[in-house]
Image (cartoon, rainbow, N blue to C red):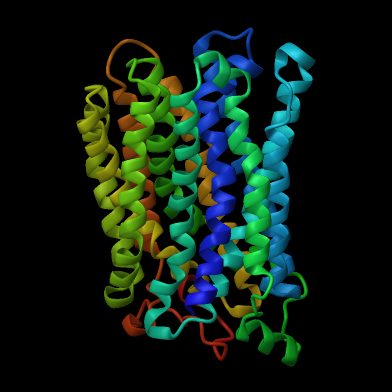
Length: 440
């Protein structure tokens, strides 16, 4: 399990490195380079719009790679998604600026960002099923949290490199070529990830499906036909987790450095401390999910987000590094209470034959609802000289929506199974907890 979980963690860390390095670049430098005719605010909005394209591509990637995972195995998904995302990320670092090739520059940026998101949409389903379908029942949440640690590791790696380059280069050097280095480094990371995953074994549950001939012929059609309500509920439930994460790691970075005039390196360091704490807390929260249930942790995380968004904005507005770090850290701890358990929670909601598709589509739909729009909406709401209370209201409203969605989802931890409990992951469960959720 340690070897399998480490391979899953390494792959998600590399893929999220690819995804996050773009978000950091969008906050710091892409606006002036690719949208020079825009005002500073409009340029940042345009850069965040290209950032959002990656989220729009993720459900499509999850549907395509989910079909591969449910028809041909989880292992091909792990390799194909990693290779695709790595190549797209390297290519982003090679795109000339607007000054060199004009309108073709932002168009290429949008296209490559779409490919990035498409690959990442497939990564999550393969990685969590690698651990979830191998893990012993009583520790499924803990082992399935390893892929969920990957985003924190990827973010820290991306921003550590950005921080080092930003601190060692002049503004002119960073804008000319320094921001491209982290994108080029993605090629080496992708090769390392493929090497780590080369010997990963197919999961026992998929092998059983293949041997008995019970694989789904059209997994996406089966999911949409029989479990569309579950897809919408999981997407809505996870929206606030995505929104909070990208409010902290992308919007706050841009807002603090442009509006509050916080030094770029200082703000990067504040956010990195918060993400480090989030990563360390992930397995702890997942272990609590094994003991107390997935749904209670998710409800607690939503409630924490609901209560903390106004203090988060107030602490950010102070421009004090210590208070900014406190605000960001508490916000991400509320978010990770949800995020840590979904690696086990979402797969447990579906029968094995459609699990790769169903879990991944619901997870990435949450990314569209919460992650794609948040940097753009928050930047627009924060325009002006006063405190950005509109951002707090927006995030609080999303937390209310997610709280309601989680309240309608069933518990899936086999140890907690009751009237609303689910069937869990055992292969003998030909119907997942989705059937238990059908009445809602």
